[in-house]
Image (tube, rainbow, N blue to C red; front, side, top):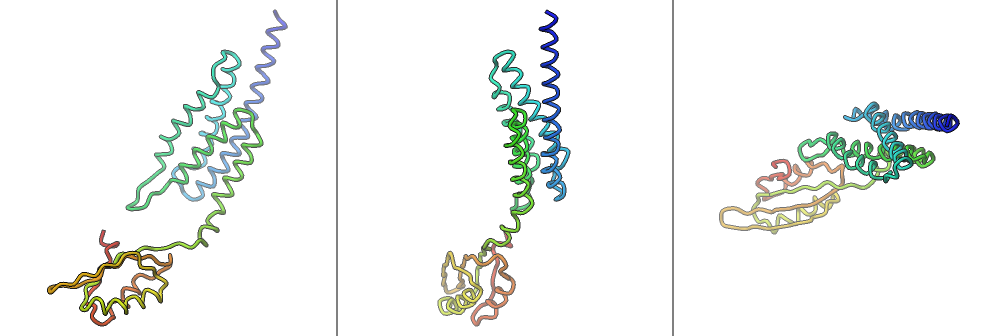
Length: 230
């Protein structure tokens, strides 16, 4: 009986050492991602990512222990964690006018959770590789995205005389600035005539400069930038 108890105690000590080792690793891995987020002053930083990673390791480790002792499904407790992480991630997402901020940070919280689960289940190499891939994406992907060709949309209502004749001159201005017309409507009446133009151009398009050139066109009375009026 004594030998059995000593064996159980020994196994318990081994598990404690393994768990401690995994917790140390997740502090390093989750801390790396959290430090990157904190350097950008994001709402979830170093401590949040580390604590979340530790929680994931403990939950995965506990699931394995429960499976060995009671035969319970080890994946069920982990699945509940992944469901619950959505509430934490939602807290980092902010609405700023028409822009949404914090989506990337919310995604890193989910990533750290998955990395912690990998460690909790003993998949060290997967956790380490995933961490460094995540860090590289967060730190260096903007060099690529900044060079990608992006477009800026606009919506102009142009009050003018003789809209059909005026349109050809406005098209020349838009073509010079590499702007593509997406929608064009011409409205003529005895009281008022105008052009409605929706288009898209380069990300660095100087909209104010284009508006100034259009206003200078003969027969143009005025121009409304619908996007700025919304």
